Image 1 (spheres, rainbow, N blue to C red):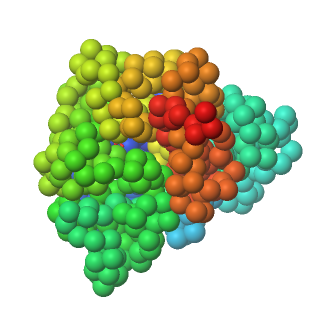
Image 2 (cartoon, rainbow, N blue to C red; image 1 turned 30 degrees about the horizontal axis):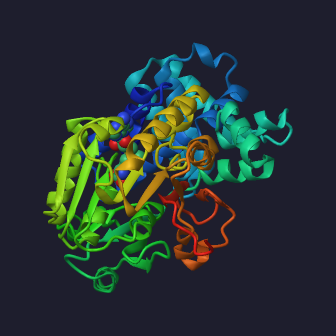
Length: 453
Ligand SMILES: C[S@@+](CC[C@H](N)C(=O)[O-])C[C@H]1O[C@@H](n2cnc3c(N)ncnc32)[C@H](O)[C@@H]1O
């Protein structure tokens, strides 16, 4: 008999274990190498991400029913987390089905004592109900358990944005992400794609972030031929805003210093309508080959890829070479926890500090490669000031040549112009604002001469 969805989910959860790393790779691997039906693929992904994303909450819950959880074998613990997740958060699965499936999985993997324990714990949880968290003290611990976010990260967000905002951010990271796609204008217009997808039964709407973006409310776009044909690319709406704000003009020469897997680079190349050049760099060839693959799929012939540390690009290019530069920097990724929950369990305070030093070096090395009338976008998919506005402020304060482009703020889409995350150093988009990833971007340029001389 072929494996059930829950058996696949349990396998991945056990492999990911408490280290938390690489769940998205294991999910992709399982989806590719097994013939799960498309309905089951959705459930499988939801079970793995959902359980991982709620890990700390589920561990607290389990402590109420089992005295020494540390003595449980890893797979038993994850089976109970997986089952709790379904009982608490999934309406579509009946409780008795969750218990029966868990018991069957326990029978396959363990002895009679474990089967009894799994059955007993789940039935007790159903009888007694799950604990509430309101009384937990201090407040940071309560928030940590309720939102399954490590306490140090909650404290970081409180330090940056206050308790109320920290709570909103942590809660938003638990909400399932909408899918959005970018339309390739070299192949079809957004309106045409929208119309055809609607005729095919999809519920689709225009993204307010980008003229190329569509939000897919219902329908599995990964299975649609437009995906294979390079007519659409999966991309978060905030990432598409980068392409929009680069204000690219045909024929330009563009540098993308951290380009893999190629989402934004290919957006820029599409915007050049296959004119000009996009030089797409990343640290390793394994990474740049992903960019090449994407470019090929989208029919783009104006991209050049090469592996190189962005902090050495000044050894390859003369100063003032590029019309447009993108530094979409490696970052802590606290804006994309919705789709990569591992991030909140694996990153540390020290990582944030180390990343900010790399980001600073990248800015310092790459900024001089911009032409006198050029524009450079610095962006991250995180919500930490140390890597975002504070970093840009520090970079600008140490020199006299560059500034934030004042037109950046007026050229933002109208709905973002009064956004809570606007500072003199850029725009911070929070994950609780627009049902998107959390994201930061700003646009820098050479200081412009003022008229009042
Ligand atoms: C946020 S991701 C880029 C995403 C990409 N711009 C996109 O839209 O698909 C950051 C990238 O920086 C790369 N990276 C990390 N350190 C680097 C370095 N020192 N030099 C160049 N690239 C680096 C990582 O390999 C990663 O692919």
